[in-house]
Length: 140
Length: 140
DNA sequence: TAACTACTTTATAATTATTCTAAAGTATGT
DNA sequence: ACATACTTTAGAATAATTATAAAGTAGTTA
Image 1 (cartoon, chains in turn yellow, cyan, purple, orange):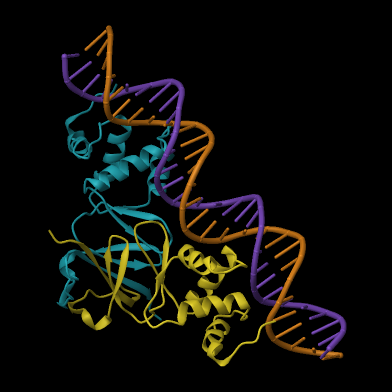
Image 2 (cartoon, rainbow over the protein chains, first blue to last red):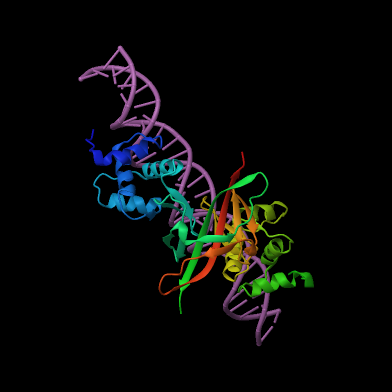
């Protein structure tokens, strides 16, 4: 059993509203993900490695996957893909865009891109969201 | 050894300019990919299955991967990713955009989307390309 | 608070997409 | 036709992810 102070409250709430009991492992993951100022981009493998590095008792791979999936399904994380068959997650869930620069990802705030013309959705469908990827290369 | 008629010429040229000798397997793959009116979206697994289904002598997985990679590196195929950790390829190499509708991909011609505002590239970088994904959902 | 039950964690196995390997086969220049 | 470098192939290896099932824990209830 663990004592949890009020600072953990929002992390626990995120877990509960994702349908997850706030176990110690999950609360730590949630804190690690959301207790930061800047947006965080990660793969499950990266998350696991950076959290487990400093821990004597490691959290298992399955728990990382389960927790990340539930948080994503509940809308607390956004998933995206690069061309390397790995899922990336973004703690910035506001609709926004990305620069991709050789595997590095940089957020672009939504209001930095506006459209002059957009196509209509096919019949019977509507637009859920619009995301722009700007691929970068070196300037020489 | 195989006789090749002039209809195969462009397929052979695509292979040669991708640095590949035009073997029978490769010519058949190239024909299968490029001898069609409409743009074609596929995964390597799908390509392999649909080609091998009708063949007595199957083409190996490695050959499909090798050929697709070389054609992609030479610019004859475009790679893109969905959120399922699988690489998709597109025979439409003109810069264009996509609707994503539950795993189904529909091309959007480049001129259907225009921008009013785009951010500058970070210092030392320039924009290689800009791609838009419009995610769809059912309309009810 | 003790006991119960459903949900969790974990190590490990299984799966999926992809890449590697090395032996047998083939395209191409001479 | 020869030689050689490039290919094909089956199968092994790798990487990311998901599934399994036994041991552990949270939350409810008496």
